[in-house]
Length: 92
Image 1 (cartoon, helix red, strand yellow):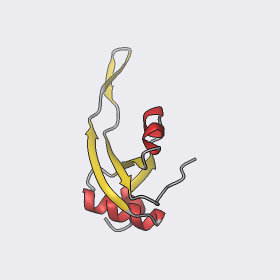
Image 2 (tube, one colour; image 1 turned 60 degrees about the horizontal axis):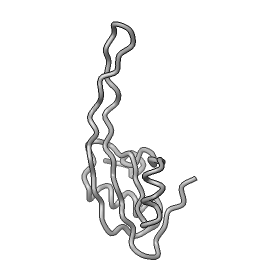
Image 3 (spheres, one colour; image 1 turned 135 degrees about the vertical axis):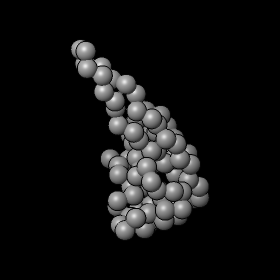
Image 4 (tube, helix red, strand yellow; image 1 turned 90 degrees about the horizontal axis):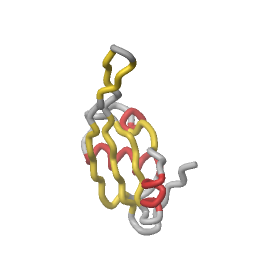
C-alpha cells in the first residue's frame, strides 16, 4: 500500500461499536488486502494515537435479490482497534 489513507476506508458507527468506544475500542472498514501491521501503522499515522491491539474479520457478501435477479452485497474487512490508555479518536 502506498498511502495510509488507502488502507483505512471509513469508521463503522453502529450501536455496538459505540458501546465498544467506552472501552477505548474503534472499528474501521479497511482494505481487504491489508494486514494487521499495516492497519496499525495507518491508524497511528493518520490519527496520531498509540494502538495496543488490532483484530480483523472478513464479512463475506450476502446474496441479495430484486425480483428474479440475484446479486451480492460488497465484501468488507473490518478492523477492531484497541487503543492504549490515554489515546482516543473522536468520530462524529
